[in-house]
Image (cartoon, rainbow, N blue to C red; front, side, top):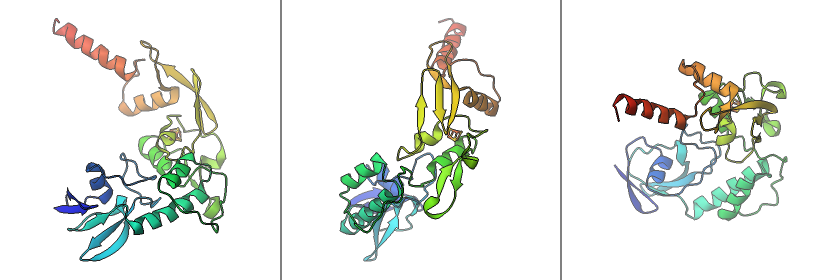
Length: 246
Ligand code: SF4
């Protein structure tokens, strides 16, 4: 099946999401709450596009909109730009401290609205990617708490979590730099908890926190060999070479 995006013919399968098709064809659509490792959430709504079918256009959220027939898609026309600008300013009221949002407002020339009152000093837009990453890749140590303007992501009772392994996946996927993570040579601090870092016994590179390594080894049902992935691969290659008599 062929659809057009900004006039460019793009091959796709029925059921594929517009964001997916656009990215495969090198067409930029901005997102905050989307990460390729997870299914689309349609949460930040920044990836809106206009879909025109049989002459009728409507605005849809491209990360969760599957194509079901031929159509024309516009990612950056006047209607999309106007609505995207409004969405960006609303996100800015939620996260006025986020440099990433400020940069997007500038990049997409978002108009200023005097009636929008910035509600807190946060960097978080509540996209939920961190919660998803922790639940799907790690231990599920954080969640959404409270409602309305006091809604936030936190550990239970805002206490250092007993289950967090300090892997940093939550901070890594956060699109607005809202989760603070800091490292020294030997420690990593995240969610008010400090973890000891483990270094590779061969090259000295940081592998991760002790808890993260134990957790990963336990899940894989393997013993930790003290090596980083690079040194482990090198050791395996050396063993193969030795056995092959090279
Ligand atoms: S650092 Fe803690 S809260 Fe963040 S993803 Fe890892 S386990 Fe979850």
